[in-house]
Length: 242
Ligand code: NAD
Picture 1 (cartoon, helix red, strand yellow):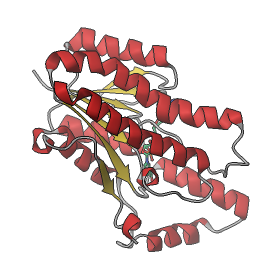
Picture 2 (spheres, rainbow, N blue to C red):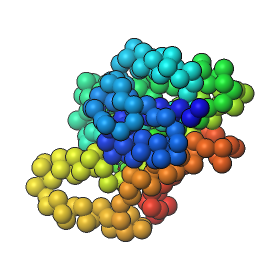
Picture 3 (tube, rainbow, N blue to C red):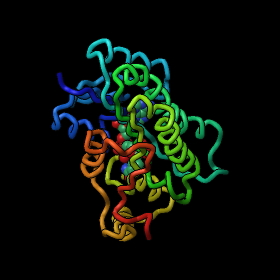
Picture 4 (cartoon, helix red, strand yellow):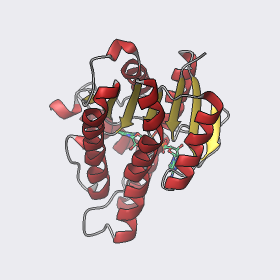
């Protein structure tokens, strides 16, 4: 029987690449997203809604009997400093980026404990390690995911369940394009120029691609990474070393 992988937010960007990469590697992949997708087994699910996440994962376990890998990836970005982040916006970012990961983790842990195996990967960010300007709620949420990886790793190591946070730098996805579109709209800056400047900010001189993140996640999920747990794995073209 093929291994079972659950990906949240698998209909676009990094999530789409994750679904594609795990299918290629022989996994049966379930994608929990609010946006439909033809790739893998799509289940409509808002990760900000704990009940919906629990129902979706219960449905998968009923169908397959197990979950080998959870990649908690669904997330949104918000460009705002603390004064411009009202309570509603803060709650929204936390509901999707943090509570969604909490709900998915809670839902897979019982079956992973029975199996005495499992790999949980949180798609965090370089912003789990460093801060960036105008990114108050997002920075907080990604630091929270780093903590979730560490505490889950410690609490469930006895069950051979590994939990790690994957920390990508700037990756060229629809989220990235939305973020610079919104910046250009507010500032009147030229998108081509801003994109070029973003590339030049990366020591490797280019942005990362979703496929490169998915390849790393596939490694972390596999037995090749059997001694890696509670860690923050950086994939950022050198950005955080500069
Ligand atoms: P994206 O916007 O291209 O894709 C995000 C996916 O999440 C979409 O399919 C969207 O429908 C889904 N989603 C959003 N809200 C949801 C909800 N409430 N319930 C279920 N699904 C929901 O974004 P991306 O760039 O691929 O980002 C994926 C993850 O990687 C995010 O957690 C993001 O913070 C993280 N990340 C991205 C970058 C980057 O530069 N793109 C860098 C570091 C980390």
